Image 1 (cartoon, rainbow, N blue to C red):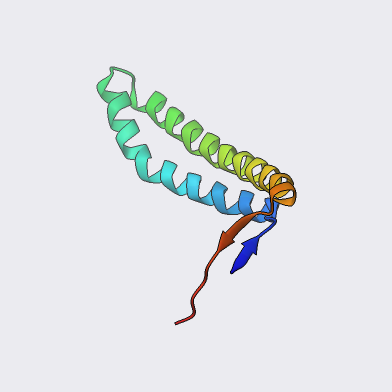
Image 2: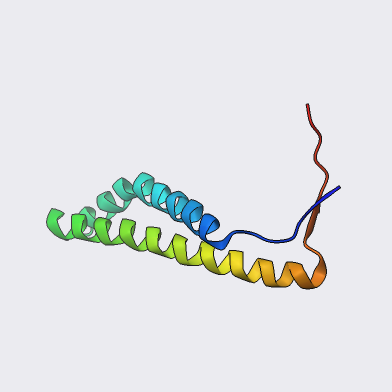
Length: 88
């Protein structure tokens, strides 16, 4: 049995930032389609997409850092998450 007792907050921030950024890029064409159907122009739609992608990247980094920090503090008090790992 192994136990996760701490997380590197900066590492988790980088990973979640890139994951959120990737999701934002994948879903941005759908958001652009919806925004142009709404009657707004293509320029405004592209501006919204750029803000959406940048915001999600930043939000992922902040969330990852906070999650890593909070997990480490709590895991030190309660012992962390126990995992059973099997090698193939």
